[in-house]
Amino acid sequence: MLDQGGQSMLLAGRRLDNIGLALEQRGGSPAGYMPVDIYDSWMRCIALGLDMRQPPPPEFVNPATLRQEQQRCSLVRGLALAEMHTLHQQISGSNFMVAFASAEGLLLDIIGDRSFRDASDAAGIRPGALWTERHCGTNGLGTAAHLKRPVAVHGDQHFFPRYNNLTCVAAPIFAPDGELTGILDASSDCLSRQTHTQALVGMAATQIENGLFREYHRGNILIAFHNRGEYLHTLSAGLLAIDEDGGILAANRAARVLLHGLPAAAGRHFADVFRTNFTRFVDEGRRSERQSLEDDVGSQFVATIENTRQFPMLSQPRVPAPQPQPAIEFVSADPAIAAIVRQVENAAARRMPILVRGETGTGKEQLARHAHAASRRSGSFVPVNCAALPDSLIEAELFGYAEGSFTGARKGGSTGLFREADGGTLFLDEIGDMPVSLQAVLLRFLDDWTVRPVGGAKRKVDVQLVSATNADLDESIAKGRFRADLLFRLNTLEVTLPPLRARSDFADIARHVMSRIDPSARLTPGAIERLTELEWHGNIRQLRNVLSRLSLAEQGCLIGEAAVKTALGDLSAKRLSAGVPSGGGLKRGLRDLQRAQLLSAYAEAGNNVSKAARRLGVSRNMIYRALREPD
Image (tube, rainbow, N blue to C red; front, side, top):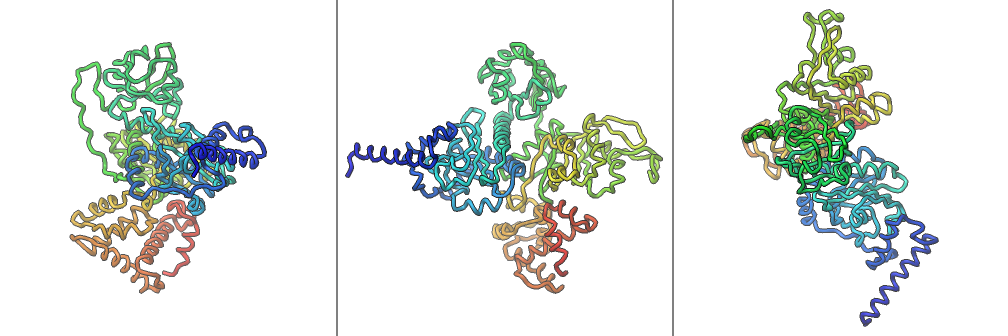
């Protein structure tokens, strides 16, 4: 047995062995080869007794602990998942992954290419894995958690050689109280890394932090400000939370930078920082979207109060604020969906253009209707399918026309959909299919919100604009089918609805949809469990069709697992009678449903394979396969 001194000497010897191995592998001093943060991390790993030649096996928490941690982090996790979907679309490629971990380095969620997920399982990159430096050596998540600042770890900068084929970029996420609350990471193989990834990850982390700030202080006065008006609704805007007496509750990082040297900390007063009168500032904020704000040293800012509607005029006696009426119900038990809904509600209240992306059937129009209800606008919700209008008539339909302005114009002319939506919301569905010629006209409208009817006089309108698409607009821009400058005007807020198969609130959605179809019908847990096994390529729209068929077969009763199996089996039997070979009841039923949806989209697109594929968000090969299969 070694005494304590002998054990210390043995440990020191092992550390020296590690340093020697590092020197041998690097061909020189690690400090000269690596960034300082990486070198310091290596020294911490050695101090922890880690041996790069003998990496420990990946360590995981049990499923119950993982679920508890996901629930504990539900707010930041919901915001993170929404950003992860956007981030993955921005920088995805082969062998790529976006991950979110708790402040303790526990992986909670991953969104990644299948090729990366399959290859990374052996390396322990999956939810439930612990990725601190103690467990995995120098790595993006663990090192960012220790440093509490962004870090990039490339290739053989990882302490353990098993991760040398990876490039990991990570950024910490801080709660409004300054405490570390999570880590966002983007990882790829070294060959697939992209130079702009670190900037995008940092922007996503800031977006999550701002979302947390707004959530923590949604009951307080929220002021956004910047010294340049065009940056007022960007990530660089400062955010201040103020109580109704002018007391400062919190400031985000951008606010602290913009007000550097001024006492903008919690516990101080608005008057300690700004020369502008607080009461007049808040009351003016109820009448004007933007106003000026002057700090105590004379710096000028453009500012807006984001949530004035819930506060009374401060210069008048205060009366209880009216309780808001419930908006259209949009199932959002999934934290990622809840975060999206909150973002949409805030954007709609400020008349910001909203772009909703997602596969067909994910509920884009329902979310648009929810935005309209949340905006409390008195006008109508006017939906228009851009792909369904003839190219030659879209401009006339949207902007209206005067009588006799063209051949076929009806007597009295037309006010147009924009005028119809004045004071309300215009929902432009399938915006990706809008002709390029009309995109220029729409862009001009967004510059001054003025309608110019064909052959008529122009007129300003007040319209909340919500657009939706399942097309890859970035690809369309690259191919010249969509204008980049129009996209920038449409997506002041851009959200992506995940497919049904990726949502954690499937049971809530199924029950909600069934209650709308037949209020007397109920789904048993077994029936819902069976339904969750399907892939739902048609998403909520396909689910509605299946549940409608179930309600017809089992009217006014409890619908169980057997009924689900029978319904899908019956569909399969009908296909068999038409000469389709048997392939198994449940799975075959799903394939038949999918093929029916593909063929329906193909017909609706005028037998245009490319347009049908874009509408459904699938490859053209899927459409071709559906066409080749016998009826």
